Image 1: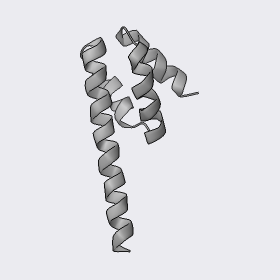
Image 2 (image 1 turned 120 degrees about the horizontal axis):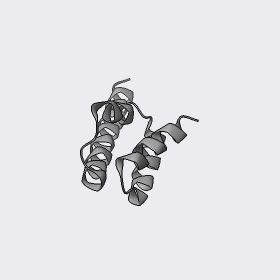
Image 3 (image 1 turned 120 degrees about the vertical axis):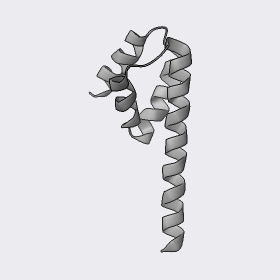
Image 4 (image 1 turned 135 degrees about the horizontal axis):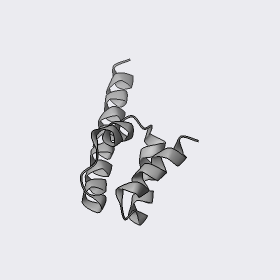
Length: 74
């Protein structure tokens, strides 16, 4: 039981760090993010955060982020 709790905490901490990194990269790439966009990104699952981390390499403007978020919702 203890091992599972530690493992879950480690996963959550890793996900939080990945979100912070992606948000920092986005801000550097396209400028300051509106709060609504940042909140959408913070709510993404790990798989979506990883996909966003790759996609942001091609972004040039905030519209690219907004489009990716819109398209990722299905």
